[in-house]
Length: 235
Image (cartoon, rainbow, N blue to C red; front, side):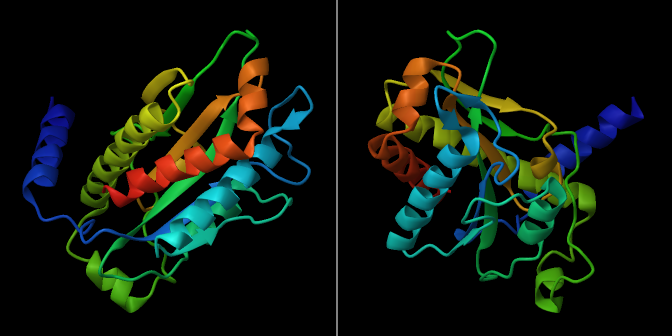
């Protein structure tokens, strides 16, 4: 009962207290899943690591064209551990008038070749994220100094959820040929290990022949990049 009451109070705080996640997104950290010795899922001559990198590059280009600052966790075919990805994201400097978001790009796979569709993950609401490291700048620490770890985690989750919903809305309009599976939650490492609002995109099923062929096209990658960029800019 105490845990439920504490959760209620935290949720109430997140609704009433001014959020540090205001002013718009000032940095998008783009994480192309897998890479190097880790190909991710593979099917029909396609590797997940290659598709995620192509989509990441398209997203970087789209955001740069809009004047949005970006950081690529990887911009070539190399292996980076999950811990290193989170450390790299958590160490980034950004314009403190806004806030950073983390977008991890992946491709789904299933034993059933008929499985299809697009989905976006956030971490579960009740799971707290990593906090700022001791190496964070004084100005960054000051910006978030009025909040407890639980409060920051709650506020970050709210922005993550809004971004995930935005992405699904934009993708449904831009890529109507994809079945929309919607927003889900899961304890993925990169979502729990990054302190800023974070989402993990599953762009489609590489195990589905039609979707594998679609995701391999430049047209798909550019349309998806525009949809994600639109979703970020709507925050």
